[in-house]
Image 1: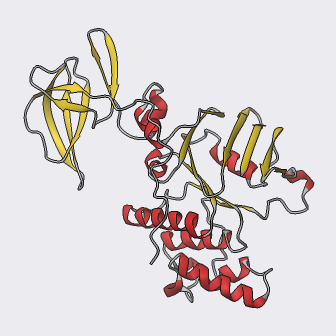
Image 2 (image 1 turned 45 degrees about the vertical axis):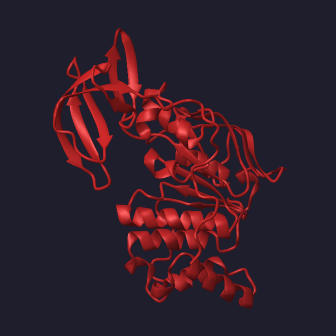
Length: 323
């Protein structure tokens, strides 16, 4: 188990303020926050690249040394994949992985390199120089290097930031396979909450150096009390009804004659798997509703709230498909 206890970091101002959370072996934890919230700083502390002013990091009940006590910063069993990938650009994909596995005996090294080339679908480009590969391939290569020596924890800093939708979907699959086949604890950090929503067993929000309570993905999405956090995960509608402020997601509605809200149709956009329909409320506020077929007329709706505190621990598959 990875445990973060009372971590605080300050430079010219406080960056992290008394951060604590835990992750069990094999869990995927999502950390969501806007740019500058302290996400990368927290990962640097967890990975042993940066020493906190206060607090400790524990792995399997052992307190890890402060980076200032290490000859070379970083922990063998906690590896960070940063946004710059940290590759050897003029060496091939295979050579990059071999370098990361250099401390293994030769036969073990060969087996590990082959296993990682297969696991992360890099076999076809094994002889290509790293600087000639695509962004998605570099991302996977960086992950392969990070886990070459079989760490217990993998930290991913904004892993989807430079990928198109197709590559994002593929990386989703690889992350789930890593969790299953490598038995990794994965900490996934992003300023785009949608990136972590479908992967995480639990989600935390990081705002101004402070960590929210632990949430299931379902509750993180449908509990809308904190508008800033909610908007990190997608569209939030806001309106007033009988003097009450109402917030709801685009799918939390039912078209109903004499419904509580009257909406004037504006336009719709097609997003492939759904339509987003734009309406104006009674005070000209924009209301966005999702649907499988487009709306083309004014409507009345009731709000069907889904944000009960459901007993749900995870939205991710228990096992990734193996092929």
